[in-house]
Image (cartoon, rainbow, N blue to C red; front, side, top):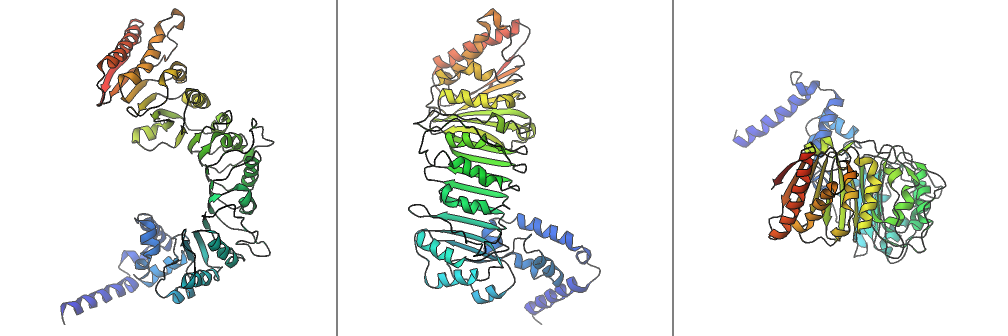
Amino acid sequence: MDDNDADDEHHQRTCLDTERSPSLTVNHLPDEVLLEIFDSHRQGIDPYDHQWRKGHVWIILAHVCRKWRAVVFASASRLDLGVTVGPEKPDHIKTILSGPLPILIEYKCPLREITGSALWRMRAALRHHDRVRQIAFEGGWANFDKLFKATNRSFPILESLILEFRCNGEVKIPDTFLRGPDLSVLHLRRLELNNVSLTSVSGFLLSATALTDLYLVINTAFSSSTETSLLACLQGMPCLGHLDLCIFSSPLDPPSQPTPKYIVPLSKLTRFHYTGTCLFLGTLVVGLSAPSLRDVNINYYLATDWPPFVQLSRFISEVEERYHAVHATFEGWDFHFSLLTQSEYIGHCNPRFKLGSVSYCSPESIAQMSNELSPMLTTVEQLRVTFDGFAVHIRLDNIPWRRLLQQFSNLKALRTDGVDGAKSYYIARSLLQDHEGLSDDLAFLPSLEEIVVGKDPSSTDESQCGRELAALQSFISARQQAGRPVKLSFGP
């Protein structure tokens, strides 16, 4: 017997042992424990889509023994098992489609029409409508027309739908799409629609009442009624946990101050991400209530033709987190507030609350943002202000620094990072004003204990740095005399 034969015999004996040997611990693990181990292994796969889904790594687990195979196939949804069907021809397509596993359809053809064998595979896969769990589709009108015709029936286990339209003009989703002539109930959990108008998809959204995740990219001009129609759609989604909106468009008519007729409660919403015009944002959030919010990321840009209004205070006041630190960042025309809880600050985690203005940010909008956040800034003890070198285009001398800093009534540490003296001088000057009048009575930043100045290594303007240090030293000397010493240090 050669070495290869010996290895094969040992492998076969090992496989038999895992089936029958009562001495092996693995044979005594309950199915529930095995499932948790398999799921933990699945979540550690990287890159996930390529290895787990398209590479079918899970087959290795199914080949170990009959017990493992039974656990794997009995938990197809939990373990995200499935066979992917797309434009490229897979091996043994007929065998794959005749099996029991869920089908994942992935057709992303933005520049070419689906024809020939690729079209046959798509239609063949969609005929198994009771096994299709996910559809991801990108293309022009001709391809979507073929998709809509092939999906004029109910898809009872469909959980995830991703559509990206590469079409000129509006594409209306048919009423019978994924529902059939009898308009069956949709069971979708995750929905992503890219490059759509809200009017063309609102009917479909109204039928997707089981959604937990919704991602919308709207790129057509909207009217004053668009926000209210979105609120009507959201009202029918009581299980919604994640809402991501991108509004890359402008209003068609002059906006009015938002006065909602009713507040839509989304009690399970924990994540709200928004990018787009402040006009749409303002009208939307005044009509929403989300007391479970934990992850907020808002980036809005100002409309040039209409006066801006953003009314976030009531919406974000429902966030129950106590924030320990704030990072204020100036970069080009952009400005962002990032709020961190104490655990995020200590653990150097990414903040889960961000608010910013992009494209063009005026001193007035910065003041407005701080006012919107005012109730959340009262617990903040650490403030870090970062300027992106010489790329800051905002008029820093027009920013009401003193009024902004007054929002931080419990601030203990102030740090300026990546700045030259010319930029940080305005902050230092606002501190100096504390002792220019006797009536102030040390009410400004009463808890401040430390100021850290981080120097930009590219800065060579010693005169500007000298102005900054002189202002800081005057403030620190005055605090020292008042019995409230403030430590000054220089960071890297």
